[in-house]
Length: 413
Image (cartoon, rainbow, N blue to C red; front, side, top):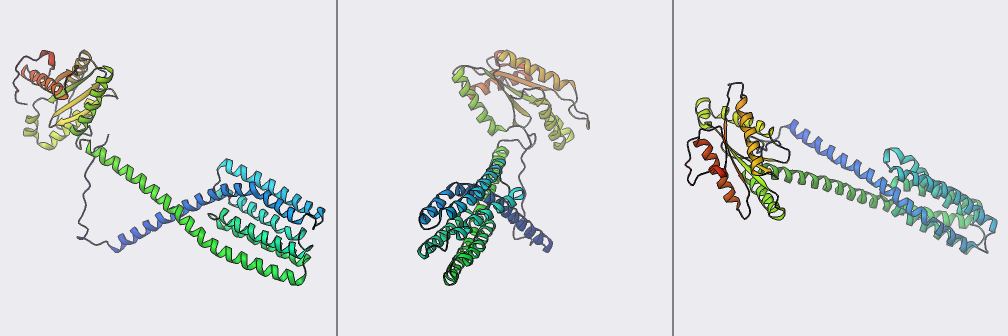
């Protein structure tokens, strides 16, 4: 666990940004926006692929509508040829699209495939004028209205990837106009061409603006999502820093209250034992007086690191204040806690904590186990009294609250 440090900030009005710093800030800002735009386009492409699959599954409804309009007015062979060509293109496109979606549609890998699917869809609808137009003036007008409806419906399908839409309606327009001029009378072909061209031009113009707004909305969603993650991370760091001792990286006294509250609740609910160790580095004041507080801080850091090495991952190390530490041992009886305390005491006394200057310390440890109907304050008072007893009896010892007589006086650290 890394300690939290308070970030130092300069007064905002004390110093203006240099030109180079300003340019770097602007460049960073632009890079972030470009990244968000790229993510929005990639997301828009994926959404377009899904929307296109939904649209293609309903395309046969439009064919049946056109066939119904034409039945009895257009030779059955012409209707069958158009439906056959459209069905082959539709089935192949839907199969390719399904494979693309199954693999996860990405702009970099599947852009050309989606554009081809859109173009073939436009080609199939454009062929309508080759096979069905020119047999009945009223029917021709109905079919041109149907084509305009197809163009309008597909505008929302390609809203998040409008380039493919332009390809589709461009192919549809070219094939439809060519068919009109082949089979319709000159006057009607001119009228239908003009009407279809104006309609497609207008819908393409407005679709572009709508697409830009849709992509901007997706970009803002990504940006807001990123900000939300950053905010959660920052809040978690603030909470961690607030519960962490900056010097040693262990939990601090504020966190200890929550840890003990959880253990007491668990103890009351399940009856599972837990114990605490209260540790006090012997003669720590002499270390500060002789070597200075910086060396004293080094001793505390080294002690905290060594202490962690004697414990389980589930145990909690807390810097209680000054040279005092508290260890919370879940699922640990008093006898086992005494063994843990003895292991810590022996390990600390065995080797120097610092090499420069060479310092070897000892620690006095008080042990207490949570008992039924005992408060946290009473638990701490028992451990604290056991520490005082260990110091009174010569330091570098482990004592439990069971050893504490009626009155124990504190000795100097």
